Image 1 (cartoon, rainbow, N blue to C red):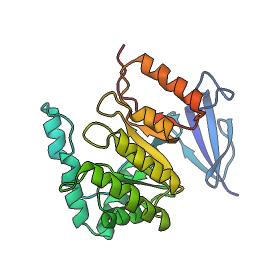
Image 2 (image 1 turned 45 degrees about the horizontal axis):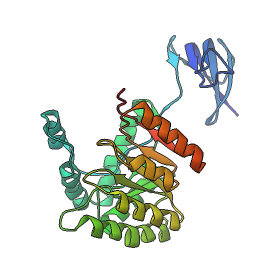
Image 3 (image 1 turned 180 degrees about the vertical axis):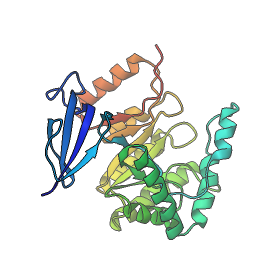
Image 4 (image 1 turned 90 degrees about the vertical axis):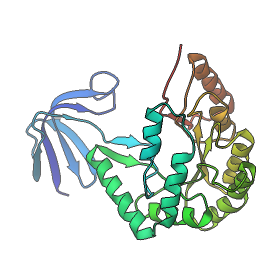
Length: 282
């Protein structure tokens, strides 16, 4: 197999403390040998290979992982972001505006938009990312979003419970997600995971539990948007329901972290990952 050698690396971050200095396993003045799609070896500078790429004395790091993206959508939420910059609270308005545009877009248009965003992410150094649905909020559009996402990634997350669409009560929509959408997603193998936005103004604890139980019963993995907008039961519910991932957590204090750690120990859920903790107050 031919080997690509990335040479003239000033610093290489291995993420393995056994390979180099400190917790990131930093090594200096080396070459990285790649065979096929795998890193084959770390060699001294000037290593032999079939093809060489000069890093120019730069630092080489592992690709970034974006564990939370809604890549497949049309329209934008620019007006919402402008309003938030002016002091308006976070709400569902931006999601609903984007949902309208997404419902009107065909699969080919959505795929083109998503591929462009994926390419932009790659240029920013992101080599792995999750792709959720969530801008359909009805079974027809959510199905289309999942199908498009499946063309771009190996695992898809269904987020029908992103917000409550206009014209339907929150508990009624939660029942629709749990009793109709999730079984259809599982039967058609549209997604591997189910996500739910467990927060004030979105899905309350009862709705979150109903959706989470339905996901597990359908044989799908569970992920939770937990406590993005402030303290609440989102993270605790994620642990209780056996979720493997909780994102956008707003943690108020170190005591909350300690409580989460204890609950994880009690429930034996070491696989649960807390991503993007935005704020911790003493």
